[in-house]
Length: 163
Image 1 (cartoon, helix red, strand yellow):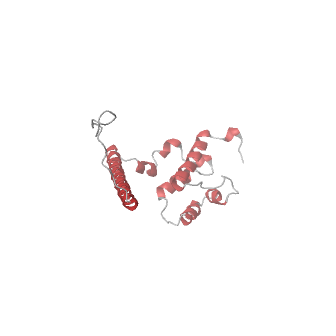
Image 2: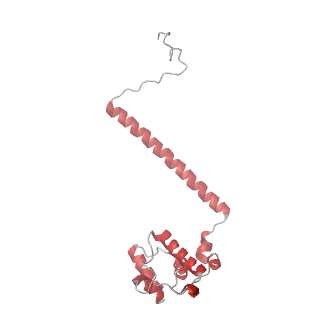
Image 3: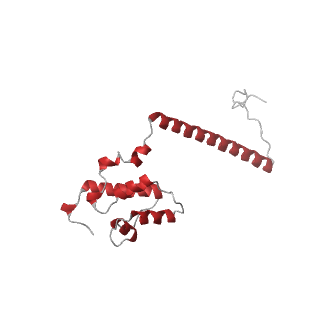
């Protein structure tokens, strides 16, 4: 059900959309089929019983602590049925969940450096495993590996020189 255009607050609509997007990023699916009173999940938010809404998803995901209380609070406030009760865009950046995500630059750099090192080690292990597999394949085939001819060899490419 669309409201009269003069009643629509575009910023509140954006916050709602961002709330749905945040939920999708955390769960890989939408929080409800449609934001109407006929949708059983969205109805929990309309009736101001978000705990039922979140318990449903925690049961579906087979984990009790899939969502932190701060994340639940933020998303609930972002997708609130009443646009006037939705969190404002500028208030999102001061919300505890958002602030908890922002680490000091040195921590971010250290974390990224550790990830890079782990990826480098993982690549090295994969390369070694590939080499091991190649050796096993060569042994299975019984192929002899010949030494490559050096490019500096005087006979290479010259038909006048006998080897």
